[in-house]
Every structure is written in structure tokens, then in C-alpha cells.
Amino acid sequence: MITLHHLENSASIRILWLLEELGIEHQLVMYDRDPVTMLAPDEFKALSPFGTAPLLTDGDVAISESAAIIDYVLDRAPESDLRPGPDDPLRADYLFWFHAAGATVQPLLTTQFVHGIAGERAPFIVRGVAKGVLGAVDKAFTGPRLKAALSALNEQLTVHDFIAGNRFTTADIAFGYTLYMARLREGLLDPYPSVTDYVERMVQRPAWLRALERDGKFVGLPR
Amino acid sequence: MITLHHLENSASIRILWLLEELGIEHQLVMYDRDPVTMLAPDEFKALSPFGTAPLLTDGDVAISESAAIIDYVLDRAPESDLRPGPDDPLRADYLFWFHAAGATVQPLLTTQFVHGIAGERAPFIVRGVAKGVLGAVDKAFTGPRLKAALSALNEQLTVHDFIAGNRFTTADIAFGYTLYMARLREGLLDPYPSVTDYVERMVQRPAWLRALERDGKFVGLPR
Image (tube, rainbow over all chains, first blue to last red; front, side, top):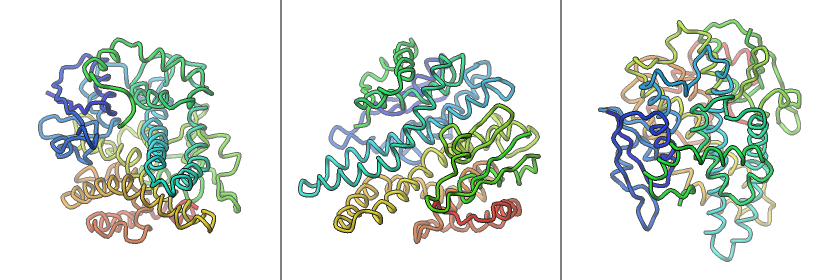
């Protein structure tokens, strides 16, 4: 049986949500973050290839990376329509958005988040310059790229109810944590009303609410 | 027929390599970067969902994101064994490394690259502080994560000849451009001899060499 090693308040919420959507049998092992460093505990890091969450084990297999785990779990649910197949008209949009979540939008958000923290934590004497330097990187690099991605997503969600088209797929799950995090960043999603409306619909899904309840401590931003 | 809109000296080299490995019929449209800004030309950006390379079109479909294009092209080559299927013993490692290339290793390398450029371009009067601030982010955040990923990859490539195991797969193609870029970063791969040896083997593959020849201007680092 597959086992989700669930790190509280992390991207692992995506996998908990997926398991709830599929209703697939699994074991759940909960890990709290270190109360001081807020990092994953050592016994969690020792199990995970890069020391990161999410993490799923299946016998001798230990697999991390959200999108990889999603694909691995979907292999065990061949009757599900959450991953449009090669002949599905949603296939191209599904592949594009599914990969864009992990390879473009999440990394840009994470980089901006890390820059924000680094600015706050810089020594007082250089804090103003530090914030200026990091802000300049976000203005020149991450900002325009994030804007291009969110604008394209907003267009897609103006035309369709779900990210890959007219039905819920694991592209929605891949984007779940990412957009939840984006929504908590003051003002970031304001220019994208269709994205905001979509997130409000997603957070009402029964499977998402069950995932939140099982996590118990999810607040949506890494700490 | 599928069309690769190929931006010179970009991550699009992955797709050119894939097409050469598969020997699949395709059209190729070449785009040069703007000689001053080094950015993609406007006609390229207008075709791509986020304005980024790689970009593939197929009738009305326009798809970007390296991993998405790889999956889309593989759908058209069902006889290929480049993407291990659900029953393949390489499946878990394949999925993990395929997604790790795009969602973890490439973003970390890109962020470090952008930090390097931003430090060099900071106004002279604050350049020292700027480099210090950006270096501190890389030391605290991107550095340890990249080290964890490259260490795990080095272990995998000490045991196996290819990234997903004992045969060439599209996980190797996903990592292709990423590791080529890493190799050009002075000293970065020195602690990982199995990764270095692996890259030396990969760059001798006939399909890679044909891809380089068709690109004609590939130097391996974004400009």
C-alpha cells in the first residue's frame, strides 16, 4: 500500500487532496515541522531523495516532487479521468498547465517569497539596499514572468471552469497549493479576477476540505 | 505535422534533441534572439503562451514548457520506450527525475544565474553589498537545495548509466540542457564526478550532435 509521509503545512497538501479526490487507499504518516527552525524533521528528510516534501513511499520506492507523485498515484487509478490521455481533447492544455505549475509558476512564487524573507532578515544597516537589490531582481526577472503566466491563466479561466478545460483534472491539483499561496500574497491576484474566482471555487471542494481537516495546521505559506 | 519554433541557444535544444532521438517527422522554424537585448523576437513571443521557449505548434495547438512538449511529442511515438510506462520497473525513478529536472534543478540553476547577473549589473556604488545580499540568498536557499539534488543525482549515476536507470529515457533529455548549463558554471559539478562523466557521455550522442548542428549557435547559457 502507498504511504504519504505528510509534512504539515507544505506542498504535501496537494497529495493529500489528490488522495481524497480519488478515494484511493493509503497510509498516512504525519510529520510536524521543527518548532524553532520550521524545517522538516530529520527522520522525514532522511526518507526523501532531496529532503523535501511531498514524499510518498511504496515498498522500496521513495518518490518526491509533487508532479511525479501525482503521476505515480494516477497510475494506480487507471479508471480515473483526472489525467487526460493522449486521445483526450484536453491533452495539450492539460500537459502544458500541469507542467507549468511546477516548473514555472511555483518556482517564481517561491523565489519572490525567498527574496521577501531575505530582505526582512538582512542586517539593519544594509536592509534598505538589500530590499532594493532583491526588489530589482523581482522587477526585472520574476515579476514579468509571473505576470505573463498569471495573465495567460486568467484568460484560460475566463473561458473554462477548470485549468485544463471543462472538467477537473490533476492540473487543478498541481496548481492548488501554488494559487493558494499566491492568494495569500497581498494584492498579487487582484489583476486576475477569473483566477481569484476559480480559487474560491476550488477551496470549497469537499476533497480539499477533507485534506485541510486531515492536515490540521495548513495556513498556506511556508514558514 | 508538428512544428518546433526553435529559439537559438535556449532550452529549446531539448526538443530538437528529442526529435532527433525519435527521428519523428516535424517542421522547424528558426528564431534568432534580438542582437541587443538577447531576448526572443516579438513574433516568437506572440505565439508562446508565456512568451517563452521551447514552443511547439500542432494545428491550433500551441504548447510550451519543456516537459509538456516532451510528453506531447511522446504521445505521437507510442512505439518508443523513451517514457517508461506504469508497468515498467523504471517508472518511479523516471517520474521522479523527469519532474525534478524542470521543477527543482533548472529553477535553482536559473535563480543562481539571475542572481549572478544582477550582482554584476548593480550600480558600482552598491555592487559589493548587492553581491553580498544575493550571495547570502544562494548560500541559505538555492545552494543547499541544489547540492542536495546534485548529490542524489550523483548517487543515481554512480549506480546507473542513465538518469532513470539502465536505459536512455526522456528524463535524460529533460536534464540535458540543465546539466549542460551546470557544467559551464565553473566548479559547480566538480564534487559530482559521476554527473560529470555522464554529461560527457551524453554530449557524444549522435542525436545530440545533430541537434547542435541544426541549432548552429548553441553555447549552453542564456545570454
